[in-house]
Image 1 (cartoon, rainbow, N blue to C red):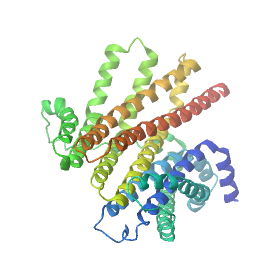
Image 2 (image 1 turned 90 degrees about the horizontal axis):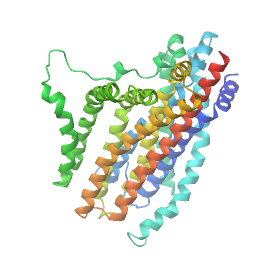
Image 3 (image 1 turned 45 degrees about the vertical axis):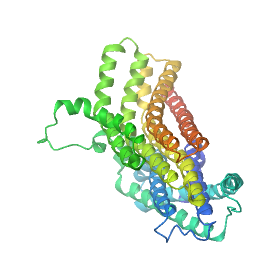
Image 4 (image 1 turned 60 degrees about the vertical axis):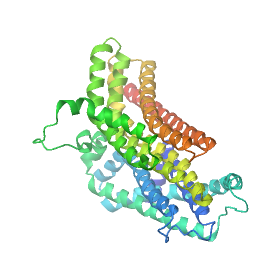
Length: 429
């Protein structure tokens, strides 16, 4: 009975299931490609040898994949919150709601893993062509060791998803599940404050975070060894700006320039909240790309490690963009009431779509400018010092652009369906 209901719910919410399935496919592709490259050299054992760069990349990959799965699972499961609440009201137990989620996620995994393995096999010839340009006689294959290690990591992903779903079903009551705004992370729960006894001088509040954002970019060109450290300092600057500076700046902008433009006022108001919600994803996107770029520059004299890190950068960029997309999608899922209010206040369907397009463009424009400011400067610095090839640098920058463009298109699709649903609800009222 529960299995049948779970499959019916999965079929009913095809769009939500597709986005979740997509990140599972990309994760499987990444895992298979990663271990196929790292195990094609008998001298490399990323799970046991702690003295090579591939081991560092393996640990980083496992952490980032776990975080990305967290955001994807949050998006999918929280959109099921009302359905779970109805089941609880009808007498379902905690174990039954957990099984309802478990059947759906396992089914999506069973559909995603074969597709991911197939795509990884299709990408191997491209990786081999790239390797032939770097070294002779080396061929990347999907060997038994790669399959075994990939299976271990995929099982870890499955365990992580099951644990998250059980935790979600256990800790949320009916009242919480019925209101999406209470399920989604609130502003107060995500903030990090200082004790009230600490008094921050005015000049720090005004200029310190801006300096912390811009100064590290100059360090990139002075000393390559300090690039990862400077990127972390810059990440602190991004956090400070998005947490403390951006909100009052946008409020001032709205009051002085947008009071006569109601559509832009609505989109900027939503954009202000989006930046706050997405600040951790933006920082994760930039820091992960910077660390992988530093590892790549240090691995150029080791073809196997270089190829492993390079593929990690390309695929992890897309995975981080997908994680950002899912976090933004979770925030979008709470906007249905906002658009109903806009409709009641005279906004047409065209106006709602315009507000949506402006908001998504501002969000991804801000993310793109911030990411390119750091990632491009890091890659250009390594290229100037001869640590990276120009072709590789251009391809990595292009990957950042395409990944964020892909995420923006998917978020627009999500948003468009939400606006359509809000219009249908209004007509029924």
